[in-house]
Image (cartoon, rainbow, N blue to C red; front, side, top):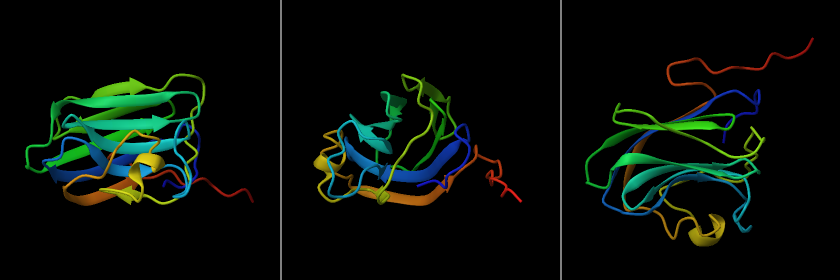
Length: 160
């Protein structure tokens, strides 16, 4: 999903979503399509009981950071999710940020395969049972950055 950079380089997902779904995938990257995703590295944004759930697995345990308020009201919501090492945060509509952290010592997410928006083939297997399906709704203005919101992405310098 994100270009390889320093292990501590932040990764930012920004998007807008409008849905009435109570659960499902908004964004997912993890294993290849034919693999089972249980206990494998991934990064995701989804819905659980109408709340946004920003999750990632770095190989030493899963982080699950949930928005305070539900977003499945059929209105547009601007979402910003940031992961830097084990630390993560999610912010909805400019409200207060919710933070969390993955357990263990690992600081990099090693994902492969496609990036899915709004759904995926064989969702339950791909997500290791985390999500049963995609969402019904709209997603727009998707931005993926190797930087914090408003910063310029870090580009590793080539050794000469």
